Length: 379
Image (cartoon, rainbow, N blue to C red):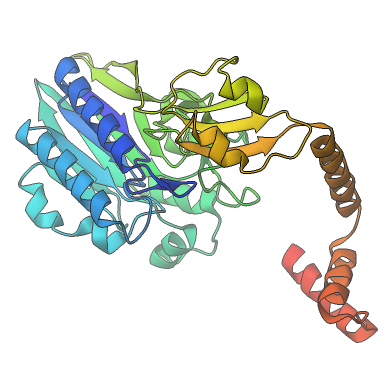
């Protein structure tokens, strides 16, 4: 049995106001080719299918086209929602689609939905856990905590799992390994203060945990707990994160092996550092001129219409920044201010903010009220 693990498609996403639809269609076509070449029978889509809760028409059509191709190939598809998805929109037609081997879990309803697939003499139980907040689990089971760790531990412990069988979990959550965070990028919503962390050990009953949410493909804690990563680079913090598709192969002995297949984008996302003159004369390494570029100019002098000039070489330039003496001084000044801020208490920072907004000092009565609020929040 061969299973393709994907996540974080973010269909309809715009990066620096540029639509990624054409790039997404290109990569999905590449994935269809991979499925045919590798004889994949099952595809897991682990959340953030769309980039927005109200997806664009183009994004809806692209997903429809992708799923239609998979259906015509008799591929089973298991899809869960992520934090970017609309529960109602993603689940539209759920009952009807089941007849076409498309299984959708967009909302957690009292228990983790289980789908059992039998293929070539191999049986696998898929547990489909869409994105869900701990407060909702706590409410459903009347728990006395909103801790993600405790709520998800309770949920897994009260899920019937036969560990003699092969069990795979689909989940879209922030999973960590012994308090170590996954490697993050700027394009995903990450944990705030560690409050929504779930340790990988909670998922020990599962043979493989197919995760979505983090955009770099990576394992957490053990090889079989993995983030698929996004299908494309969606920020310049990802320029060194090569995207790949993960395929699980389960043999007759129920042993799982993994293979990783590079996803080559239509246009890469890159950075280049040089002067404008070097760029225009192509004296630096230009590469594919259609790529999405962050161009770092080293010119000391001011440049009129810098982005217009850069676009004569890179029509899809997304960002321009400068690296020169003036810029370095600005960075040093900003760092000094940041250091000064880090040395101040929340109350001192609020006093400064209050004065800046109201042009008067914060009186003692209001200061005490602010302090009491800070103490309550910290507690």
